[in-house]
Length: 139
Image (cartoon, rainbow, N blue to C red):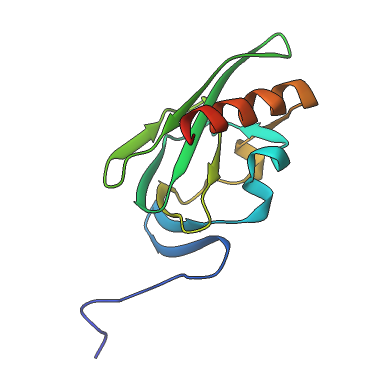
């Protein structure tokens, strides 16, 4: 007999898909060095779906930006509040940084992949803006 409830946990660093069903998936994102503000090197957009984030523990800044004519502008950072749902709309460039104890739940379409989620590589000046936003929000 198949279990009525599956219980999953992910405690390692980084991202892991936890549940996939039909056209959607649930994943966990935990602290990982590459998402330290000084190491962030890109923003990513999902062209076919929204992406939902829920902070379960620790801290996470969700950054968004506009990209037009190969130029990044309007960079904003939101210091996520535990238990609130943050829906990044389809086509919005975003990235995030996490505290060492952070746990973030992610819900997205199961077909979200590198082919439909372009990355925009950032330069040192943009990276410095991300660091400044983080320092301001987490002071």
